[in-house]
Every structure is written in structure tokens, then in C-alpha cells.
Image (cartoon, rainbow, N blue to C red; front, side):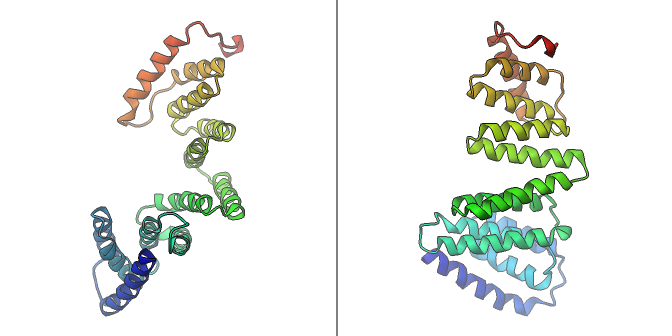
Length: 248
């Protein structure tokens, strides 16, 4: 209950404080930057104060809603804890506002992040109908995406989500779609191989790893060295495993 009261108190406090700064000429990103630093330093009160100022002065800037939702979500704890459901409900409202104001985001990635944050919250709250609707919204987002790489990025995120839920078939399906749309092909194939390994389908695991060797990494990432090393090592272990002749 204390967490819930804490949030409500600072919402009221922030709104009252912000009303005196409507004439503030600093651009939105200045407030957003300060709020991010406050969040990083676990100063939730300062973050709430700053973010509510942004909402009053720049109501069209979506970043403030996203960061506000993150603060509420971090304060929520478990749904069964006092005020937990109420805090998650406030987070849901802010993530939806982020999506509504996606065209004005300083950080465009917050739009897609909001969809997946909502998916996680609905799962946590066991809101099955809302979870399924959000799943559909994300899939529609992918289907309607014009750019292949952006479409692949959505499927990649879905695959990662399903992997965490141990839904292997859905994970495989979405990594395959990520690969087909040209998004992080080598990583998509490597992660696919890990799922086949977990399923003890070593023939498909080897086939996928061999296919991964045909691609380079699209971006320089610290993880690349470990992935490449893991591919070579695992293929050595699978030397005696046969793959379909049609693969070659």
C-alpha cells in the first residue's frame, strides 16, 4: 500500500510543481535527460516530478509517458502486493499513451518497447484476453510494416519473448520470419539452433548452424565473438550427425 500511496503523492506533487513552470523554455529532451538520470540513480520521486512537468509543458512528447510507465512498473512489484495491480494499471495507461504519441518520440524504439512491456504486464496480471489481443496487435504491426528489416526486428522480439516462455514452436516460427526478413540472420539462425538443441533435434540443429556459417554479422556487437566461437565449437561436436542431402 505504501508504494501505491507514494506514487499517488508524487503525481499530485509533480502536477502542482509543474504548473508554475508552464512558461519554461527548455526543450523537452532536457527534462527527459534529467528524468533518465534520476531513474538511473533510483530517484523515483525526482523522475516523477520531472516527467509530469514534461507532460504539462509538452503533452505530445511520447518519451515522458514511456518513462513514467517504467517508473510505475518498477514500483508495482508483484500483482498480489498492496497497490500492485493499481500501479500496473497506471503503467498500462502510460504505455498506451506512448504508442498514441509514437510520431513524436525522441527515442523511436520506445514504441515497440511499449507493445512488449504491455504484453509482459498482461501476462503477469493473467489478463489472458488482453494478452492475446496485444499479441495480435504486435503481429499486425509486423505484417503492416513496410521495411523488411523493421518487420524482422518485430519477429525477432516475438521469438525472444516466446523463448522465455519455453514456447519452442512459436519461437522457431518467429526466428524463421526474422531470418527471412533479413534481420540479424546469423544471430536468428544461432538462436534457432539453440532451440533445436533443447528439443534434441540435432539434425536440424546442425543444418541451422551450417546455414549460419554462410552469413556475416550485420553489426559490431560484443556478443559476436562468443556466438561465432559457439557455432564452430558446436559444429565440431556434431561432426557425426547427418543432415538432409538436399541441404547441400
